[in-house]
Length: 128
Image (cartoon, rainbow, N blue to C red):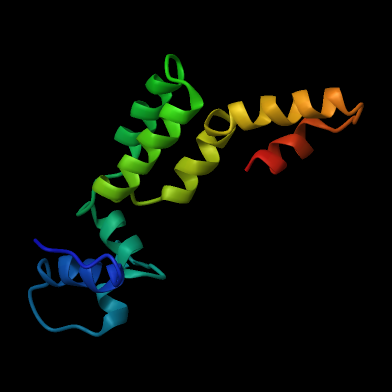
């Protein structure tokens, strides 16, 4: 099936419609097991028509153990471009510290050279 990334909700609606037996209101299409979901994407995910992001979480968790931050960012970019994870922002939040580790260290080194004291959390926000 061809997808248009500029309008993903239409794609998820189409997936849901492929599993409907008769015409229904949009709210009924977004209802899975008695729960009305806010988006067609959430409904398709809850219905099990989409893969979850577990595969990408495991991939990144394994890569963290042996890849440098630059390579991790490239891997994350490839996952975003070619695989369309369902919750990309959650993946980012889970691994952002690993993605930005080199920036974090460079900010810490610059702070040390300039005698600036910052919290680790502030440096992490700067690295993002």
